[in-house]
Length: 436
Image 1 (cartoon, rainbow, N blue to C red):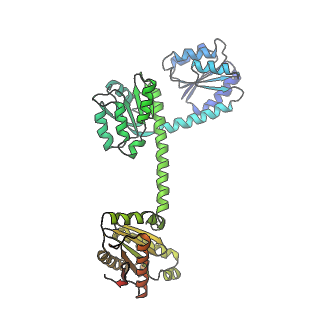
Image 2: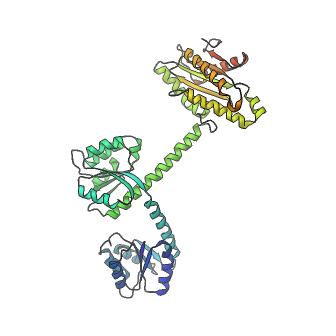
């Protein structure tokens, strides 16, 4: 970054140069406004720091002159002053000054530069896929050319109809659109359509370009779902700042959403096995059972209890016990897929929700599961399990509490019969072993 410092006092020049040095590539020094303007015209300058008082002109006049020169409209200009009155601040800002700092407190200048540099660093690494819709192909080419050395990738269309098709098929991080486009669809209609595609596109920031925007049009744009707007003729540096702010805000929002999903996953998953946990089960079970009654399909549940698991922990330690639990969980995930939901209730107890599965089929699948558990031999250990099964009755509607209680009763029956077996419990009737 090339810095121009315009300051008549040698003492302040040295102090200011020291502050700017860590953040600049080259520092150009001038003690007068005239020399400062000459330097600006001969070298590409990225930021100017100027004193309110100069030897040959007023600092405000210097700023006004810079704003009339090439690229002067967009350059960052910092003014240093010893004046603290409101009138000084107003005149400075009206002339085109972007930041004002007191010479008596240069620490504020240093803090500003730290934040400015960090913001520039973050924005230089911004990535994104951008959907650009503009009937002015020359302007679109200028935009893409301006950002050619960045991590931003553009997909360009001249009409809203074309853009609407791709917006439904691909994900974007930013949409930039003109209001008047080729075809019959306007930019405002496109914004409304994009917002209705899905939740992901509803969150994508939209920046509107327009020649003229009155107050009612601005309000209409914001109501339609636009996040920001910029008027023609485009100043590409301004467009860049608005785009990167929107992209940075989306990145922050996406990070928060990802963290939220991770927290939800942690809250619903058992950390040891990766299966859903009891909390998740009770959040979905009754709804799943109600769905089975509504659409008239069978619903069964398997209650699985590993046999003599306490002996494994006592004889081999809890770390080996964990290996056993993880092996069984992996088997459940492999065996039960699709709409089936395996859950770890806690300890050595597991449960599987089986929608679209009648009791007879559930018994058959449980018998297959037991044979696979016998063949597992995690850590070289022979393990077995007892399985209790129940099914939602057809003649009455029940909830998860009654269904789980029946399956739990069947597990206890399997244990009492010698373990390593399947017992079915039809609600309202006695348990039956390996059959219905």
